[in-house]
Image (cartoon, rainbow, N blue to C red; front, side):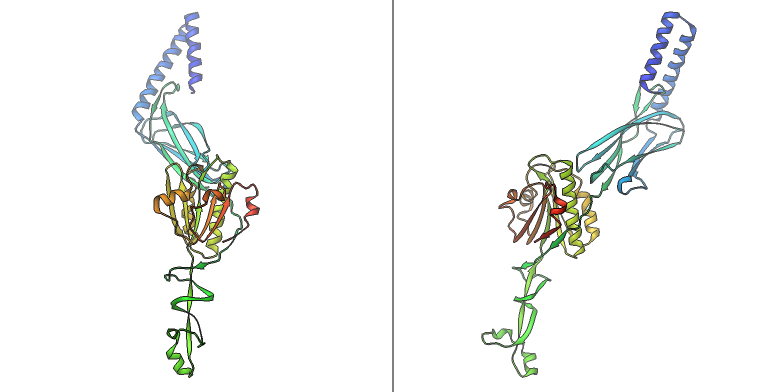
Length: 364
């Protein structure tokens, strides 16, 4: 019974008793008092015997994604009036909703409540059952019971086809495993080509063993090492508060770019920040599984005003060590001037209304 209904009934009985003095009203009031005392006693006795558990439901995909909240009465006493609040929060967009639930549990009995998770926006969803109380049968007094529990579920963003053209740059280091097929260089550990000796060639380039077999001088051209240090920076800082559409766009662009690079069999690093905690995260991605493990963390915290991800990274670890950078953010390119000491940088602005069409291809 709800508290409002119980109070109305009690008031009616009290007024009736005052006006008429009838024994019927007095008996009814006494019965309600007995029910109240007994049920409250049960609630107090069983308050430590209520188990609460939240988990991702069997239908855990797409728009029909569900989380399930379980309540189990471990006592031998019936719990007629168990109440709580189920909260659903998208920690990436900052949006949330809640609803009150009420159920009854038989001795050693259980109840399960399904909660729709998808709010139409990508992000890390947190479903929690808190403020759990065992109330008396009249709903007048509640006793805190059980422990708060929660479960997390990631709603994936839509994915767009984005073609990333990746032009490798010459590396200053010889510690590489990628070499140019078109241009010779100075790394003698790898042979670019073998050709006949030409006037002016360095004598150290001569391939003496092969020359002795061909009766003519043959030289080895060294290879040109290429730099493939690629970073995808997802900056969750902003200057002005972002809309839900812009938040969706940032998630879609970041994941779409990552998938495109994985499909092209390119290894890269994902760098992203949590503005609220001033933390920056970095992970190497080579396979689709790596990206799948990165996305939930990427969508955990919201886009908020604060210092840029690259400023935070430089303050924490020093300059970003990358030859190519794709920076996805809700900022303009001017916000990153003098912060990126890299060879090639492309800024992807998630604030563009036509982002899906505009960023169908990205050239590094």
